[in-house]
Length: 311
Image (cartoon, rainbow, N blue to C red; front, side, top):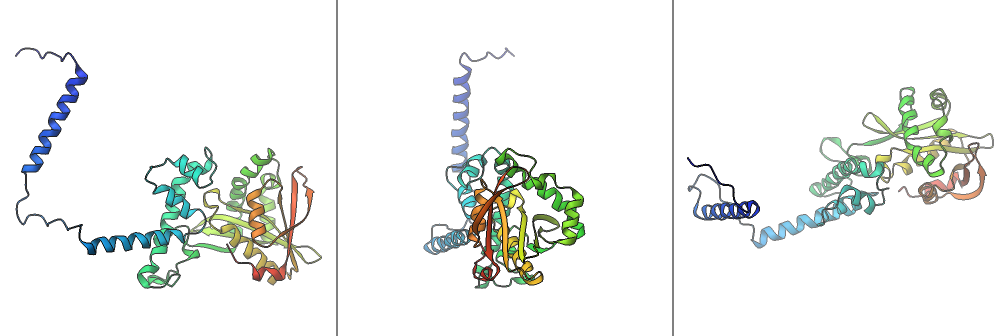
């Protein structure tokens, strides 16, 4: 046979060939019909009943999403946007620091929030939000984060996880002050072990992983000192900081008879300051830490904690 002659305009030849094949496929699809009885007929999607059920389902989904705590609602809303945003755009839209660990952790946060959304929908089937679900699971705050996040006293087995978590969490603070000698970053493993043994240390557990921690002790004058509150960067903005703070306050008041609570944070740490002010703390002064960072000192009376709603 004669050798094939290449087309003079390859681009036009490819375009015309694709169009011809598409038309042929369309004509074939119009003529072909499935054999009767071999496949179930497709459900009629245009009925008023189905439209009403679909609208009710969408309203239930949106209502459940609006009840999600923290950034979850905004994160899922951004993910469902018709513009199909990138993870970097989603991170910026919900207040994450674009280009850093936040943007890279958006897929993880989406998994967490989607699981929380699914659990929020389960009460719609039993008629009571926050009720006990089949199998003994409890919906609501403890069902958040994909698994139950439990706040409990730290044990000696948690020391290494607390040490690693603390080093991870305070990197952002160090970057904020351009000071990588802040106390949580230079503390030794033995010092953390001593605090767990002597102080009131609480951790947030996500399964077997420690994802948050806080420490507290009392001064001779009865003041409860709270420090080194940290939550894993992937899980910040979900209320874990408030839960850890409440646990430390309750233990200091009940076990150490604290009459007031005192804590401090760096003057540029706006998110920390917002958290503490929401919890009822007021600024009482400032000081300069041994690492040179200016600290804001905050206090509140122990009796006031029962009137503060948890976030």
